[in-house]
Image 1: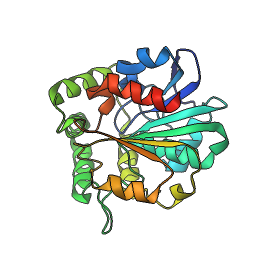
Image 2: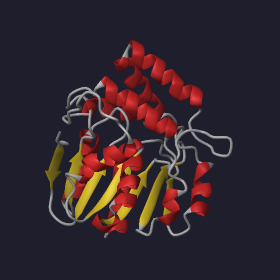
Image 3: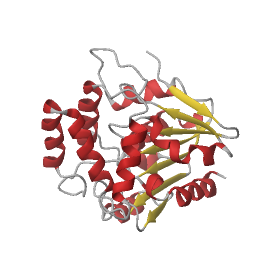
Image 4: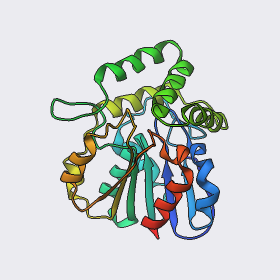
Length: 254
């Protein structure tokens, strides 16, 4: 099974990993600007976009990272948004010698709220699971709405996300279900304390999926990393604030 990758541009290798329910086309709004400086690798995670998904796969985070590792350049900068941030983090932990740096965007090492941790309420993820059993297109639409919630241009952001999403095949139901499982179960908080790569964490202050109260807790836990908060952005800062986002990446990656 081969993971689909769209490549463009010239320069240092920069790998971009999308979030749940999405595909590599979500980066098309900033790809042209980034491609002027970097060799981009826009990955479709297994079961999303043009990447197939075989039956009976144990869709775990280590397995996902393994599939992506197989199509990575020898040495690269890794950027992961939302669920893609978990995959990028796993890759940085298991293949550190192949990574120059890690950038996580609107992502958390632990998405689900715990007794000691702010995150997505379990009932929200359970609601998505139940909706998937009925109408998964409606589930994706609702998820898009949550991602843009709070953004100044929420309606435009959703329209853009929906437009790019439609450029590639619809996600496989099995991948959607497994992806929700990862958001609910994965907790990399302890593992990432061992990370020695340069690490930038980008957040939107209005994000309802990665609450702003988690940011100082992550700052404290990972003092060697750097965090940056876009005050008026929500869960997709590269769509609501593309110019600013590109400048942030260029400043960090160089």
